[in-house]
Image (tube, rainbow, N blue to C red; front, side, top):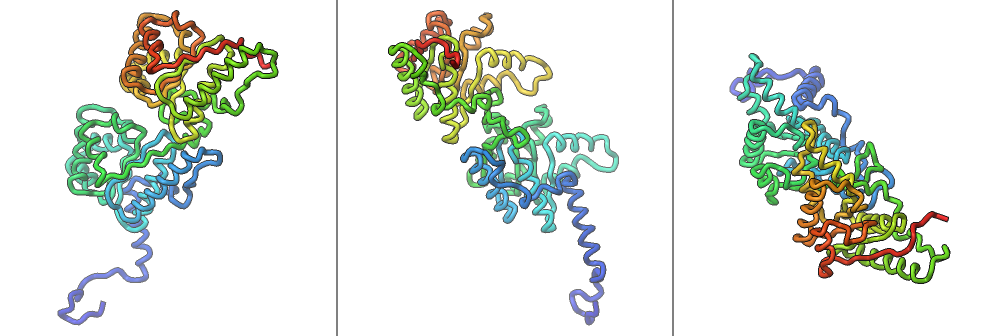
Length: 408
């Protein structure tokens, strides 16, 4: 530029205006390469549906819209931390990538990494003569915006936990912006990291309750064992009261009483309710209707068939299992509303009896809402469980005397 001698920019080299666009594009490509966004370049706010697929329950669509709003606000100011929670396919990664793409378009460096890839990147530096571990580690810790996708899927070795803590703690101390996506509950995250993620002055947490968009019929909520999506059509509205099926009056009266008790419980789940009766008498339908009623209110009940529960617990002992026994059992024990269908049809091994007793005993002591269906007489159930069912301060037993419904 033609500046006089003594001007601050005298003698400084500047890019010719004819190359400005080319240089800008090169810088953008460099930022995208550094950000690891090559495969995610198309994930933007513009092509994200903030209300999700048609047919989502209101609470699911609202949680998705809330996450979209918070993500856009974060991208605009990069202030604090944003934690997006939800099951696989709920939209967490799309929103996190949209934040990163938005920021990079502004010319700000961002690093987007799945947590397993982050750890692999650090491990590979030990054998890389062209890049030191210290330089790569500092680059990740200090990047203007760091996005950690799929937090919790990493191999939880001591080394991995320590490196993650060091990165997160560094950004916590220095108040550097961070986005984390995870399908974990906070209680399942390592304690030192969890304490920082729960700082309300720094962290905004959004729980996306939408189902997997790849499998929208899977409406299971937070618990991976719940099969409520298979009972989505079983509601109070379509329960057969069988008034025109030739049943004796006493059976009709009893069936109506069961409906009334189930409806009352669904409105305010408190304590335990046990439905007994023969196969096909309507026990499962009423239990599912309670769960679906609560789901429509925005809660995530777990509907689990007892033999399936035990099979899943056994499967965790497989070395290739992606989830630990302790975590799975803890999730079931502590879920706010648990529906256990077909108690008594499980294999009555000593191990099965002990696991069921531990489950029932925990929920009894904690007074957690529980719905149970069984075709067994109460007296035929494990005496330790039966004694808790007989406690009328916590549990109401609703016998259904009507015979099995054949649909005729």
